[in-house]
Image 1 (spheres, rainbow, N blue to C red):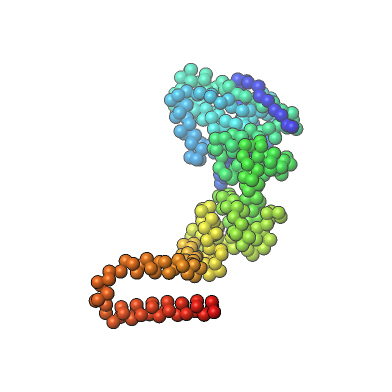
Image 2: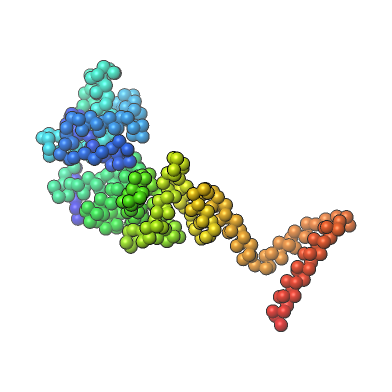
Length: 368
């Protein structure tokens, strides 16, 4: 069993390197993968800090305000590993937002944007850290496990796509099985398997010669729903055992439903709920045809599916239920109002009576 431990260590902020390939960047359009041996280069570190500062999703401004108001409170130590390409430097694997916030504050102080006290500067530059200790062969595995515990089973700062990407690496790069990954991350093996399959399904779109340019990381959630629903994955020919679509044409039908349409029109399937609604549409050929019609909407297909469902439901209702409903309705008729029936109303009643007589005659004949 792979093991690792931690050593407490106070490290100067200047010796802490932000992770340029932080998983949280994977869904950022501005992100470009960096070479590991260049992590310590000033331009690389500056670009990483800018990425965290400029994207509002990372909420660095809010974190900086909190630090200024409350001070830097290291309730959880920053987790680091020694960085082999620059002596005395450490790569941050857990706590990048906190370190980025401190670096940003000190840079603003240096540039005259704000004024920090000598006590703040002292507090912000000496960082209580937990140095990860593991053999060279196990260090990458240990980093992934720590990030998984933190961002999959623990506080979910990562999005679903980043979490799934970590699972792919643990499975494909390290050769762990789903149960082992689940045990490490504190989630179920079923969940791990589903996330892995969803990433492989998304990968098929990324590699499709017609749709590769339209693939987006956001579609991960849609593929996650697809591989979870038997009727949906069967219709579009997704094969769990082969981890691919067996029918390229069917796969492209799904790609077409989730991709932006010509003229930047919204896709028909934009949320996991939309994909889930396919369970209601796909059992009906007519509704499915409406779904695939470029001029029709998802709601059009849902309306057709619902009308077909109701029609089928009416056809399949037991005779005793129908008769009971008729009796219940007739019991509410005001007897006195029958003295004022017009010719049309009398004709309607006679029609109902004749229909019931015919049904009774058919039923009696089958008994004979």
